[in-house]
Image (cartoon, rainbow, N blue to C red):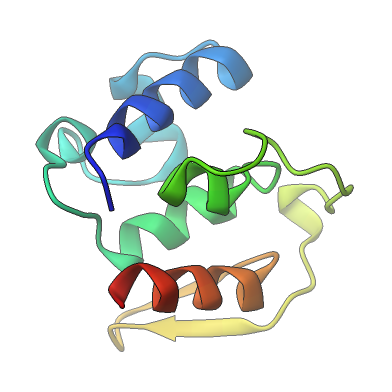
Length: 111
């Protein structure tokens, strides 16, 4: 993951939601200051929260800078996601639209 990840996340929050980082962190449910602390990577828990809160976000673009910022396919609104529920760190349950793509991207970044 390159250092431009943080830049892309800030760009997405501003363009799509007209939010600064503090407000975006609140909206997505991630800890305050998390985005500012990103250096070499992001936890899967944080990434999952962002993906759940922002189903239109193209995760490939966010992680790798490839493709468009938003997905071209329609996704269901956040409140009606019907994708499988996945347990993360045995403490939180997160619904993810496009879960299989997220898993593949995480695998490719780890290689």
